[in-house]
Amino acid sequence: MIPLAVSAGYLVLAVVLSINAWSAPSTTYLGQGPDPVGQMWGIAWVPYAISHGIDPLYTHFLNQPAGTDILWNAPTALVAAVLWPVTAAFGATVTYNLVMTLSLALASFLAYLVIRRWVPGGVLAPAAGGLLYGFSPYMTGQLLGHYNLVLSGVTVPLALMLADEILVRQRFRASTLGLLASLLAVVQFFIAQEVLLTEAIATIILAAVLAISNRDAVRTHFAFVARSIVWALVPAALLLAYPSWLQFFGAGHVVTAGAIHGTDIYVTDPTNFVVPTVAQLIAPQPAVGISSHFTGNASEWDAYLGIPLILVLVLATARFWRVPAVRTAGMLALIIAVLSLGPHINVQRHALMALPLPWWIPAHLPVLDDILPNRLMVYVDLAAAVILAFSLRMLWLLRRSPLLNVAVAVIVLIPLMPTAPTPTTRLPTPAAFATTAPEPIAPDATVLFEPLPSDDYVHAMAWQVSSQFAFRLIGGYIVGPYAPGVAALQDLIHSLATAGPGLVLSESTRLDVLGRLVSLGVDDVVVGNNALPGTAALFAKVFTAPPVADGGFLIWQVHGSRG
Image (cartoon, rainbow, N blue to C red; front, side):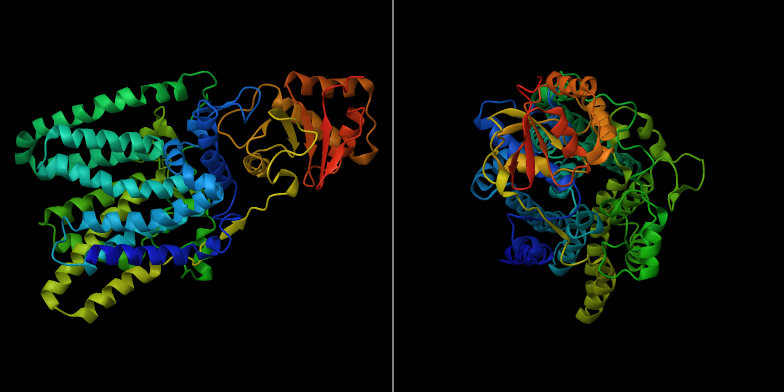
């Protein structure tokens, strides 16, 4: 009954935090910005693809005519498939909100369970640790836009549990633990591959810390660890061979020069450890003024621990250094916190010193250079949760004062409280795209929207979902370049549209625009209210037939407009 009560408490807190989304869950989503819309597109895409016999890992419904690799853009194929019934019944936005809400509660509960391995005999201490982890600045920060990373918070305690069994306890067969690790790796691959890589990095660091601290046990434990790794790697490699090949070497795979997001942008500002951001409920204006100049954005300012928690971590680690769990958690937290700083120390968007930090090495290695170092803080938060729980339990055993225990927990946890309720965004669907595509767009037509679907304007992707994928899109919010010819067409359209309604279009230019549309396979052009002011006037001169007006949209058919 106690675990049930603890999990229910976490769920209540998660619902309170996300309550604004649940007031209208089909039209309002947790978070802000374009990323949630792209992820909801992926939630809807996988069931559609499977039900229509299409490869769910590659799509031609975005970035026509080239298509795009789903694993780079919306990698949660497994989750989308499992939650297919929810999406079919209530829509992708409800599924998105459900995953966000349940992930907070489940991550907290799993952290509570794993903490009890080192903090037995009590409930409140490990429950406080679970609360710290599941509602940490990392988790609530990512709640602003990355449901796959919030969901990944569920797998981190599971990874720690398996690592503890394989590296330390070794109570089960190596084959059993290896296969469980393999299963977790495959699941994580289809949630967030970045987290799979960082879980591997954190496990390697954990193994190194344990080996250094327990040299005498290395010889007796090594063979078991090696067997477990073999049992984990072989099935994982077999199961992930095709999707990995498709992602990195298949047709249309993403090719970039260096890291996709850069290596010195999404890093931890050292002051973030003690300076709260807009994501915290208690954030004085001077602190917000400082944190607003961190690199990256609010969802990636994940390093806040607060002075009270840092004091507890330092004092507890020093006081209980001889306790293996505390010593290991303290060393792990320190090492990974340093790694989260990135390849260089950045303070207020300025490199403080040219001296490279440890993360400089992975920042210059293929694949690893795409990891965002600030997101390593999830492992620091879990290590901190273990130390906090152990400290509270020892405080109780030494003093037997409920008031003192509660006071310490409150002083440590209150500064970490997230802004509540979590910010939300409304995602209204125009009547023209409520159930299917408007006339005259034919089924499976390729459509050019203006504004072009991109990270600046993702609405057309949401309309594609609401219309049951009735059409394909030029462009889209994707990782990687647009199909050849799209960027050049956009440049031409924008340069002509800036002339406004008084545009004088020569016949050669008209045919040039039309020819580019035809070469990309565009069947229809849809101009919305947010397009550049001269866009409608431009296409009125490009096409010989007048547009169809529907709910604020102007729709032209490309076919038959050459004359």
